[in-house]
Image 1: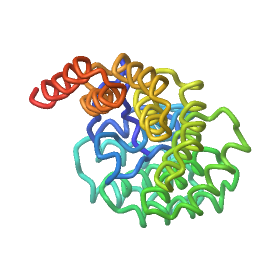
Image 2: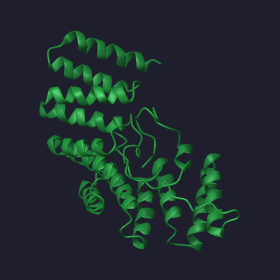
Image 3: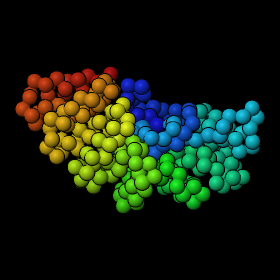
Image 4: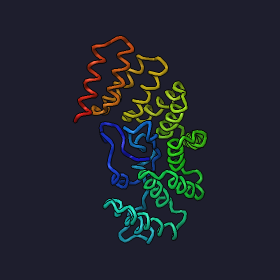
Length: 266
């Protein structure tokens, strides 16, 4: 669910404090083990910001708005325990507060507590059953937990609500990719980049899925787009080298491996 993503505008994985920088909700996580190169919410585009929602700015604000700002400030200062306590205060006052539930879920997910994140998203969805980005967030985290049926159900429901949601397509692609269905995964990654052409991670996984299906020419094109969007994307350069090896183009393969190593040592 993290906002950081591979693109020309955002570059490499962003720090935790950036999770609380702007307004909006997004879904996006990819699996930690499989996609450790990537942040979890980057690629779940189609929302309105960095994966968070916040109250409309008011000079003083209501008590819930003040608590929400205090929680975000606590996270900005890496005071995780304090932030959790403030979110709990907020949710005691307003159990259905969308921003509080979602942001607390993002906090738990980003610090390695996905089950607690799921609990918060479940509570949020009880109050907001058709909230698109909550569904994408929960589906994405379910995917990291290898609960593929639950993840796919959430993500397909999100796509029924918003057929062009890049984050839902991306995360559904990851689920299908992990299930060993590269052709179906490629279809979802292709739809993700149609909605968000700057998402280099989606281009990478599209290239990976196409490589698995043997469509080497299109895999090359997708991976070249991934590194065009993010010239520091070492993993994409390495996979592009493997594709060139399969295409019997050793000189180009060697160059891609070299570039991947150079980036890795920077």
